[in-house]
Length: 83
Image (cartoon, rainbow, N blue to C red; front, side, top):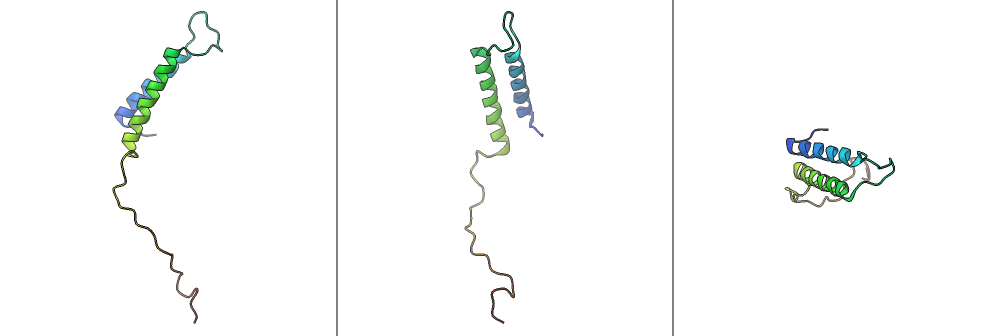
């Protein structure tokens, strides 16, 4: 997958936030939920990455070409004509 430099930086920040959130603190068991702070950090990083990817791909922009309604498809020659 190709990422722009800005997206790559945000992607790596998200990976770090996920890793930090999954790291066990002293006294925690493996099935302990992550902290509210870690959850917020992960969601913040994910949101920033999502916004950057939208910007990179350009899906937030309106279409540059005016849409034209397609008319009825014409049958190929010899089909549907009386010969």
